[in-house]
Image 1 (cartoon, rainbow, N blue to C red):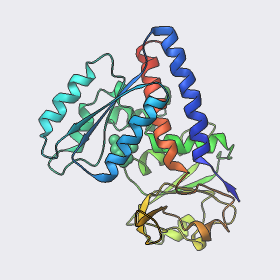
Image 2 (cartoon, helix red, strand yellow):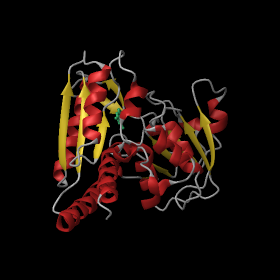
Image 3 (spheres, protein in one colour):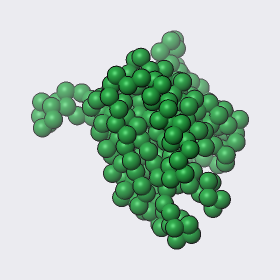
Length: 295
Ligand code: GUN
């Protein structure tokens, strides 16, 4: 079985991006800038935001993090976004989710200038993706990272049956729409399963490419997978493990042990899809800089 090594691909990609940032600087005297806003103190979000900022700096981009209190008003958050929309040094704006309950996440997404929406969450970007105008949009980072993995590993996708389990706006919906597009690394027949789907194994057993984005540890078991399938695991679930220093470990939505005996290729957790997400965020930020500067 082939292990699809997202850690290695993300390192290759970061080296490529670093070289592109240097070229941007040589051409314009400036470098791409990403601003991340985090509201409140969710520990997992804090780790993600710290990693995003660190990786930005590693490849020579400017990164700033705006930390806001958990009781920040929606108006203050949106006013801040409007200022960033008009700041020429900011090429990418990302508001870390989840937001506190009193803030309307959709209103916040709508406030971000689509040309700086490097998360690809704005309806203009998602709409362009659905309609196949990928050259003019930002594709959300996790689906985009999965596409990059399939492409770099030369996984045959044309005419294959891709089953996506999960229908979130961040992963499931953009992923399914991406696999449907008429591109080299997509062009699939696509099925989406979700929490109300009756008999999920009936569908997953037919998948040539199975993408699990459910958020439930070990949900996909070997009996649900067709022999020879390519299995992409998007899950990052914390489960208790007294043997580790932190008291927990990370596992995916796929039962790795069992499924690796059936699949032909598979992403591990950690080290699969996760490291690709940040790399694609930086790729989107670079692309924003290039579009804004006509490069
Ligand atoms: N929370 C979990 N994943 C993401 C992501 O990709 N972008 C943002 N903004 N928030 C997230």
